[in-house]
Amino acid sequence: MGSAVGLGNIWRFPYLAGSNGGGAFLIPYLVGIAVCGLPLLMFEYAAGRHYRLGVMGAFKAMSRRYEVVGLAIAAMVFFILSYYLVVAGWTLGYLIATPIGKEAGFSAFTATWWPVACFVVTAVVCCGVVMLGVTKGIERTSRALLPLLAVVIVLMAGYGMTLEGRGEALSFLFKPDLSALGDPLVWARGFSQAFFSLGVGMGVMITYGSYMARESAIARSSVIVASGDVSVALLAGLAIFPLVFTFGGPPGAGPQLAFETLPQVFSHMPGGMLVGSAFYLLLFVAALTSAVSMLQVVAATISDRTGWSTSRATRWLVLPLLGLGLLSALSYAPADLRFFGQPVLDLMDTTFGTFGLLVGALVTCIAIFWLADGLAMKEQVGHGAPRRFVAWSGFLLGRYVAPITLLASLATLAASLIVLGELRGR
Ligand code: PFF
Image (cartoon, rainbow, N blue to C red; front, side, top):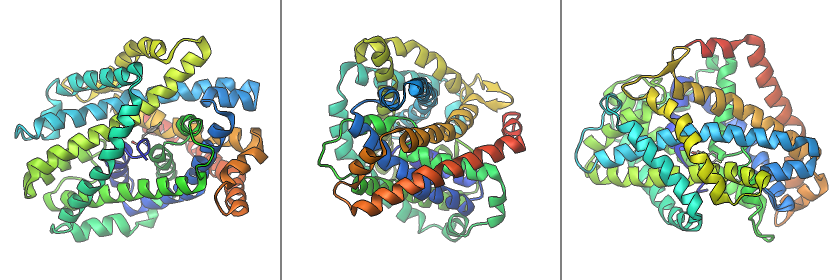
């Protein structure tokens, strides 16, 4: 849950829902969770626990030629991590600004070099945590703080429900404009958000599964993680959209959506400064736990290939990570760095967080459901659960429905050349 709940729920979900038809976005997102995300989550844990290896090792154990696919997934995670840390840095910036009573409007914030400084600090802290091997400590911290984060979001959503814009917000979120579903990009983004939010298709859950105790019930844990993750995303929507509709501002503002609206909650709500500081602190911890898990996948892949320790591998990653992340950080700073007319961060999120992740999920499905030892996988998932049902439904979905759905959504995208249109600027 620590890896799943993060910026994906509170930053990415509302911004994508806001710019992809609101309630209409919920349909592909929820279908993506149920049809592909949950089966993948269960079987990624299963593969990890069966092979007791990280993504590259597990893929290699399934088929020698697949090792390079594991390597490519680790590279994609590295790209996602580079901009994820930039957004985590924004959280840190707001965490500093809120208690000192600085009005943290997003455009004022990005008119300074603070976002870049905060990114550098966050990236260094993330590398430090992995290098020092203090992930156990951060796990314990997140176990204590995550429930608190949920409480604060419930409070914020409750406050949102007292606002004038709540009616409009509720119908925006829950009354889908079905015409938006004709757009293949809405499906692609909904699906990839399901994977991003659960943290599947990136090899992370394979790695986590490799640490899982034999007696843990995989199916049960997966259902709990998925429902907790969806609940936090929906609550974040309920906290953010009433504000958007009460105080104005377009719901389709893009990646800055949460960071424009959240300061407004805290400046209006009673005790806002305290709640705000707590919120940013908790969100920063949630983001850091997710970032640490991504960096570990990359570092573990390097150390598997080179025989270096995780710490040494991480040390080698610091500079490339800073260099790559800087491109995204500079796109929301006075430098206003853009490629193809779009801020680099938006482009990274579309290229790697959306399309890359769809490909990552597809190849993971193929590896786990077609190449891995099927009986062993079913055995792992069936343990402690209505055995046949879980194993078979997971396998049917994972083996046929998920890859076909993923292929169809990628093919439609390629055919309609929307990717190119998207790259050229919205
Ligand atoms: N699931 C995390 C979130 O929603 O913020 C993001 C994430 C964490 C993705 C860990 C991938 C991962 F390995």
